[in-house]
Length: 80
Image (tube, rainbow, N blue to C red; front, side):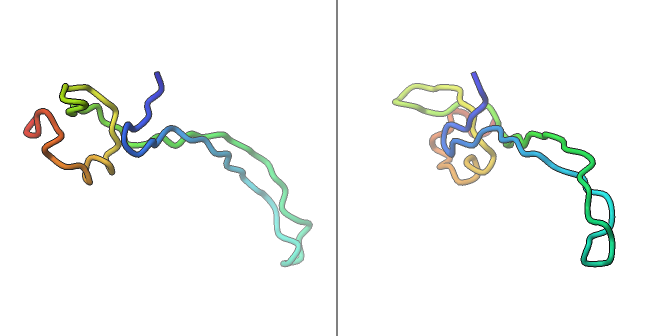
């Protein structure tokens, strides 16, 4: 099961980064050449918390941003 925030729907996203070498044509060079392409992943800050869902305690993945904006009465053990 993938780690997805139960409230905001945040999930792991991927992006490619590229490295360029050389001098741009604007400054009199021969142009920028692409020398390296790397794929990386951005992972959300997820925490496993126990919340009241339909009157029963249930453990769910929740992002830190959603936890800050959440009503504290929904947490099962707020002091833990």
